[in-house]
Amino acid sequence: MPKIVDHDERRKDIASAVLRIIARDGIRGTDIRSVAGEAGWSTGVISHYFGDKHGLLAGALREASEDVAGRMRAIGKRKSGQARLIGLLEAGMPLDEERRALCRIFYHFSSEGMSDPQFAAELASYYRAWRNGVADAIREVQGGGEFRGQDPDALSVTLVSLAEGLGVQGLFDPDALSPRRLRARLDEAIGCLMRCAEAKPQRVRND
Image (cartoon, rainbow, N blue to C red):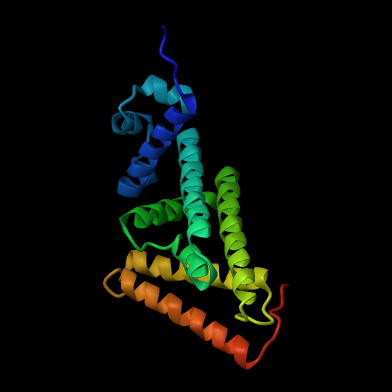
């Protein structure tokens, strides 16, 4: 009886191999031959599933986005309230080796996305999903009286920008911004925003 091939699983395995190479060597070190060696498949198999280098990169970016999305769904199921909000923001920050690798991958693709519409669209979808998840968490904590008068969608833009900005600095200057310090700065900023909302309730403009 012929062996049944799970093509989706094989694509996922190959995309994961691409992500490992990008995290280690960058996009320039990624080609069909290097991916074949990393994944343990022939160059013919790699080409069959992804075509060329651009197809490999597009598949890898999609896999990275789905990885982060899966983390965020798991956080939503396990946590609630402020813990959920912080967990969602930390999902896109370099706080451990796995998340550090994912951040490196997204930053590599950010430069490519400036000139590649497919990469740009995938990155836009990733940020949109991150903001939407954070906005939902904000609505949840507003039910407990936090962030009164704030527009959840507008505030999610601020908080995601804060988390990513801290993450970029932590990735390139880990001696100054260790994971512990990144968490402390994030918690401090969220606390400040909550106190400001309590002191002077106002609606953030959503231009």
